[in-house]
Length: 371
Image (cartoon, rainbow, N blue to C red):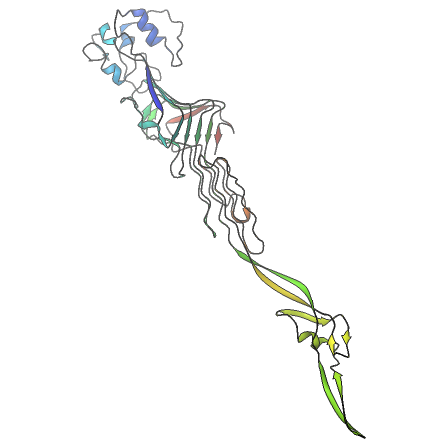
């Protein structure tokens, strides 16, 4: 896990503490490292530690460090007697920065030093890749009550949900893709997700349904040679008995039926009835044949754990066989059998959860969000 924690401060570890420096570090300071052009005097009342959770940018914020600052570790007071020495080792902002690659990153489980629901401004930057290999587990989660958290997805950073598995063969239902970012804080204040223009927060694609095997029936014409249908007929003559071979006079139909293939119908003689042999020279008939045909498996959806494999399922062998469904692209539904649109697993959310205490800002389009 690559999450680095830093702070703006601590200030005034040694040496004198001036009013102008306190003004610069606390009232004029911005979280991006810049400073306002602030030359007005600063009062003691402004330098009290303010614990209100409603404040979005307190001058001296409430945090563990500012509660234990000063030579006696008794912190910056919230009211009453103010001593400049209690400003030693105070801080202004809290920074967390994720780099490289993490899986199933719990954003609220990082080292906030007890400050997650205090009013110090906290900027959590995603600078690398966060993913998940299991659609039941979002790539990144934030479930704690929090105040003044800015979750910034930087340019080039990615939060990628897991692939939805294809349905089993035969007839299995494709599974849903996983969520990328899941925000479910029960309460809190002023929490923001900021999307930079080239970041990716993409839910996983749903899996395609599994196909099944079947059969196909075809009817074709077949030709064959007929069998003899002759019989011997004898009659008396002046010199005794004379016997001759006589053919059945049915146009060769019986000749053909005697040798017809199993399942043949509409049998007849088309090649001429060969009287001397009493057999049809060329029989014809319709033959119906049923053969097994193969279905195909569905495809997994796109996801952190399936970024390059094909999403396209193979074609079935026809007949009653069913092909599997295509896997869904990022955040899209998988397809059903015979590739019926959206019949498979559902695509995962880019940002899921209740999100009642979070606001999404920045660039919101098909590059930054897919769901």
